[in-house]
Length: 156
Image (cartoon, rainbow, N blue to C red; front, side, top):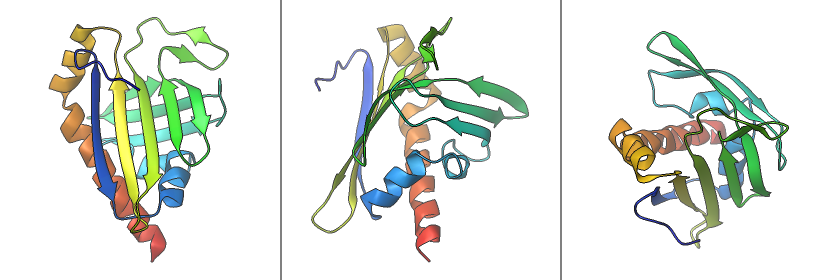
C-alpha cells in the first residue's frame, strides 16, 4: 500500500506482546473499551460484527459528552489486517460526514512480538491535517500503550 503523505497518517511500533492477543483485543467488543480511546475518555459501548460489511460501532464518553461512531469493516484478514471506516454503517449506509478509514496491520517478529502498523486515510488534506492537529500520533500512540498494558494484564 502506497501512502499519500498529504492524506494518510501512519506509524509502526513493535509491541512486546503476541500478535494473537493484539488481534483478539482489536476484534472483540469485550476488549475494545479497555484501550480504544486515550484515558480519561472512555468507550461506553461497542458492537462488532467481524466480517466485511459488518459493523464496528462504538460510543465514547469524551469530557461528559456521548459520541456515537458507527462504522463498517472493509477488509478482515484473520490475525493480520483490519480495515474499517466511518464512511459507511452496516448495510453500506453512507455516512453524512465521514472522517477516515483506519487500517491496522499486524505481523510477527522473530522475538514473538508484534509489528503493529496503524494508518488513518482521509479524503482530503484538510481532514488529514485536522486529524494530525487533534493529536493522531499522540492519541493513537496512547491507545497502543494502553493496548499493550491491557494485554500484559491478560497474560498474568
